[in-house]
Picture 1 (cartoon, one colour):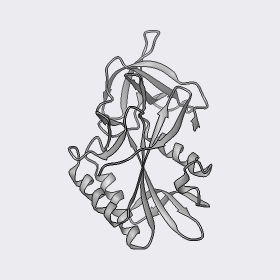
Picture 2 (tube, rainbow, N blue to C red; picture 1 turned 60 degrees about the vertical axis):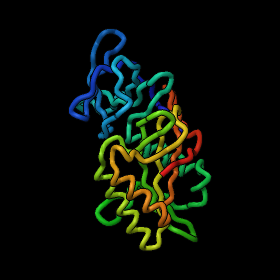
Picture 3 (tube, one colour; picture 1 turned 90 degrees about the vertical axis):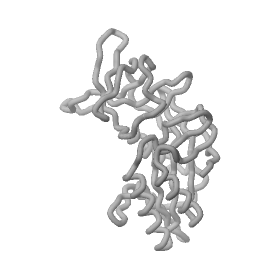
Picture 4 (cartoon, rainbow, N blue to C red; picture 1 turned 135 degrees about the vertical axis):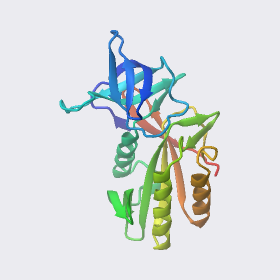
Amino acid sequence: MYVFDEGLTEGFFVKRYKRFFVDVALPGGETVTAHCTNTGSLKSCLVPGAKVLLSRSRNPNRKTAFTWEMIKIGETWVGVNTLLSNKIVRHALKNRMLREFSGFDVIRPEFKTGKSRIDFYLENDNEKMLLEVKNVTYREGRYALFPDAPTQRGLKHLIELENALNEGYRVGMLYTVSRTDTDVFAPARNIDPVYAETLKRLLKRGLEIYPYQVAFSPEKAEIVRLLPYEI
């Protein structure tokens, strides 16, 4: 469970533009511009008039005072802040909340390998593991899909994990499925077939896949279950 230490500001989605900005109408009538950390298309998440939640920056000199955290699609809060995924996973790893990783004593974020940084390096007396985290917001029917736009960066991370696999590391992809209205995870083959094929190939070689579903609310974000996947 990750608890928001300060209350979030409620508003209504107006529009997103230049990838990093979103306009939000506040209940009092004012429209504010918030920072969007998500560089994907946010396909299936941009609904005009939908309720959103913003966090306020503690940096008084930042150009945008707010960061976009969530949007409510139907009855479901969807977590759109990609930076929060790593915080949630780091909290869960450190507190041994994920059974699959509870045996690791060393947890090191931002591990440099090759020309990339992988989100987490894990180690115990018997093995070493590299774990990359991706946030999933795209939904079609009962499926949570990644990516929602072609991703060269995501592909590069898979190649780095393959190189680590060749060096004897255990490697994994942890997808935080940041909405609870889905039942199965899958790669978005229609969006990025190269990423999907690479993921499938590495799965056969030993890559581990962990799609953890995260329930968001105005107070907290909580990992609720490990979803099945179809590759």
